[in-house]
Length: 466
Ligand code: FAD
Image (cartoon, rainbow, N blue to C red; front, side, top):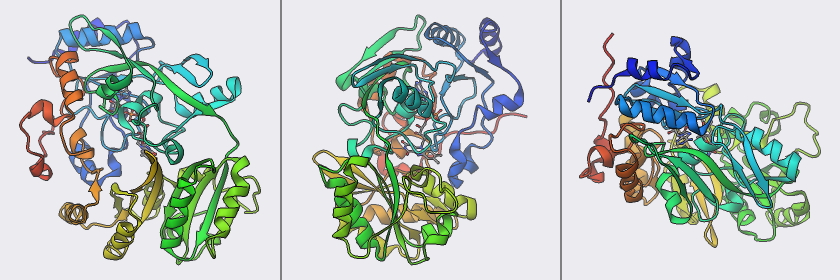
């Protein structure tokens, strides 16, 4: 089946379509360049056209028309995904959803919204109208859409209290449109949510989202300095574990990250200082200080509610999660990062810190996990080439440090390194022609793929004919 792009475009011409080559190129790209490996593999990829639906009815029309003409559809929200999630591997149509940006309902503890709403704008409206806020958001808060977070993200600021986005109770309901001759609208709750959350839009388009909310606070954002990495890590872990202290962020930046890459912080730290970035609810500040007093030498050097620095450092959450590497990249081009799961094992982190001290700078984010906590590592690394990077990945895995590889564009390689049967089964049902974001789900293209050979999987991406 050869796509008939011209016919699809002609039939959709009454909708808002972008054909300007510069716009099409822009909207075919996300933060894939964040990875030097993906940059080399994906830079040339482009859609044939972009359509900007304003309602669910228009989404259905796009899917129905593209289905009829065998045209691939890749969905886009804010375009901040850094695994190349929103890049159309097979050309076709990019469906850009930021025109679907309304809050439909706000209630006690929940909100119903359209998928293209920008999370920061949504939170501002929620706070103004109801004194509530979203439980968690990515550090790309000011650019990312709610739908893109659910389909492409995993957690972030708020996970220190609420866990990961896919943990039970962190998404209430999703409304999803299938890509068939007659697209269906399905409502998912409970176990069904896992079919489409973090599925990169490969098996349905989310058109309505119900999310749980929490009371909004004037979070006190702080940087806390420590003289050892162990102390900074133990403090961040204990702060997250304390059930009575309400926090939204607990990041750890090993020396010399803060001194070397945090421009507005540099003046206040040395290259030997380890830093925590934290967000604490105002009513928990006394307990926070009590806990900090138990860690000799731990010192608050910045607080957002009492600015003593001559220049505002900006939001502390824009130093955490993937923003740490983004800041480092501004100073040094030849670096990148890994995503590592350490669980709650601080000794494993310390062993990795010692083992890799010549290869990486440690950066941790602490999350709630079940009744306990878990450390996610986003270390900054300096590989000379792809094979050195793969080597570092392999060394981590030997130490039982699981890698979510941010240098891969498929769901499986960037995730749990196995087929998600719920997502695959739903794709069979909802996208029988395999037209939704093609190439991102290995198990669709190669059901017998052996994940032991994972690092040999580079399948796509022929350069388009000139
Ligand atoms: P996009 O990039 O537009 O899309 C992401 C994926 O979702 C794509 O596969 C797209 O096809 C699909 N999609 C979008 N909308 C829909 C829809 N309505 N239905 C179905 N599929 C859809 N991620 C985190 O989880 N936590 C972080 O803290 C975090 N920090 C980041 C920091 C930096 C500097 C960068 C570059 C990235 C970071 N990310 C983080 C990744 C990304 O920013 C977030 O996941 C963000 O929420 C993605 O939202 P978006 O609107 O930009 O999605």
